[in-house]
Length: 413
Image (cartoon, rainbow, N blue to C red):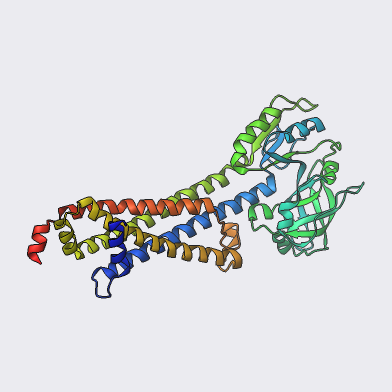
């Protein structure tokens, strides 16, 4: 039997209520539990928030966009013409899941009492509706399978509230060109992503409406959106798609511009990257607080057990052997604290995940409730890191044992 482990287990599990170290040990355990719970919650919330914002940005623009190189960063784009061979070549790139065409056109919605500038985003039968279906609050998606352009649109709840519209209503949209053109659209679906930057702009319609407004041919459109399987490989896949389009030109001689969603929205993704710094600050602070509590508890425990240390030394026990006793004891304390920390942290995250009990201001945070994502790899790494860091912090204080002189302790006793 491991003697050090046996003694440590007796110390830990048979502590009397009168032990001086009992309150300090309890505080240390609570400190580790609360620290780990806060770290788990911080990671779940930040990862959830980043994933929500990232998915919404991608939902409106795809992972990679291929447009005309001569565009001027507005929604009034110069058209491109990509033949089926080019689209198939892009789809064959490793990591590409889907390629879809789109066309955009700025306009103004005018009702009897209100008006609002918007962007009509035209789509065709190959459009991936998964994102908008998951955020659809009323109605259905538009049907673009007919032989004539459809006047159906899917509009955001933000715009319907602003303009006093509802499902089934019709409205006129005016487009400023050489002459003002008007189109009448009918609302068949209402979506809400709480991403106000896009909700207040994007109205989905049949792409043929935009092509007719711009006097484009059926094979002309604003660009291609490329969806990929793994966001973590977006730079790699983006380079591969760029290599496919870099040396190709439109029939009119214009080059293609290939950009990832990170390049199109650098301010959003830079802001999301800054959140990682907040997580690191929280992790370091929580580890420091938990470590300080553990060090204090171990020092009090050692001072309380000086007579036992003196007797063990007088019987021939080495300093390292006695230090192992207290390190084993620390192992029990850390394990108990981490167990309760996981229970508290994961329980609170689960409550928020399933109920959304904590709301947020959607206009400020782009989400209606605090988002939670369970990344089990990160949680396992957090537990392993917390355990190792806490145990390493105990090695230093345990060095105090080497300074205890058995002769002086026994004489004092």
